[in-house]
Amino acid sequence: MSTFTIFLALIVVVAFLLIVVIMVQNPKGGGLSSSFGGGGTQQLGGVKKTTDFLDKSTWYLATFLLILILASNVAINRGDSTIESKALDLDATTTQPLPTTTTAPDAATIKDSVN
Image (tube, rainbow, N blue to C red; front, side, top):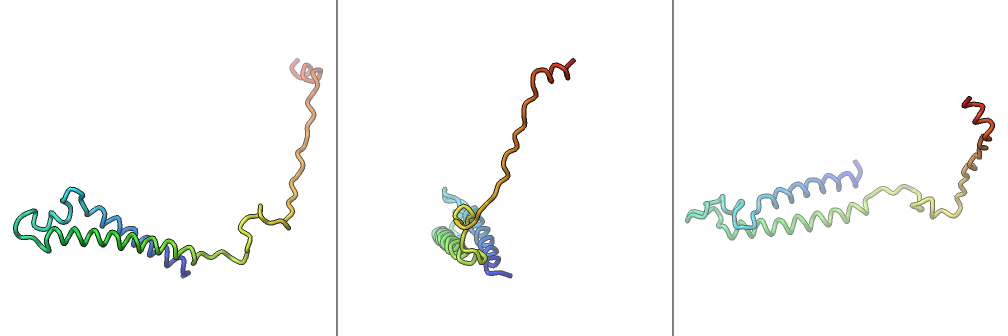
């Protein structure tokens, strides 16, 4: 298993967690924070603490995702070639076949084939 594959798996997991954390939040004060107690006096952890946890976890996961994406660029296997494009390779000579020219039939040939 290559390093890039490990980075790719971590990126997928962190992206999924980030989606879940964002979907749980509700900008109107609902979401997970309202389901813990429903606005009553008995609140599990408090609405403010739940919102702070979700907000901080969103920022941490987003930062971690960005770091993983940037670090995965280093882990990409680029091979032995230092030239990325054949257009930049000055030593490479490419030969392309010359276009074949066909002669158009004369009008007399076309009249004979129609008749």
